[in-house]
Amino acid sequence: MKIRRVTSKNLLVACRRFLGKDPITNALPLGDLYSPLLKASDIYVAIENNRVIGVCSIYRAYSTPSIVLGNAELDIRQALVKKAVSEISDRFISLCSPVEVSLFERLISPRGSIICQWSTVQGNGS
Image (tube, rainbow, N blue to C red):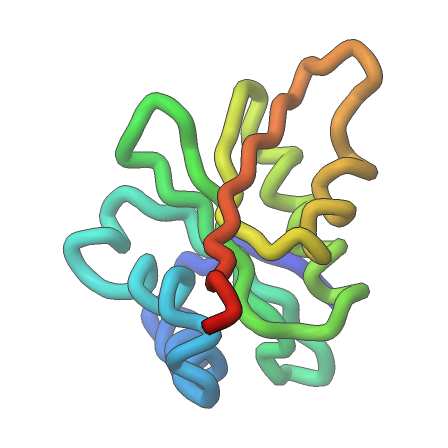
């Protein structure tokens, strides 16, 4: 598996196609792949055997960048998170589920040089 930044139109189209297979789950990263959000986003892709197997975006429109992940296997998301965090040298926000928080906690240094904040929306069960 290789992780790389999306710099070509063909790779961008392949990422859109991958995320479009599950547009509800992938709504946030999918949105970053279209104008006007694309201009303020860095997109990273996981590729294996010439196939897209995961997508991650860093939205940089605000002073605190946000990281979102497309639906993929855990090991793929871990690799994408590691790459994304390596591209950010300051505080960032990630909108992720409580299960995914551990992906970020493993990458945060003990001295707190990278601070991860996350938000979750939980229903009231009714």
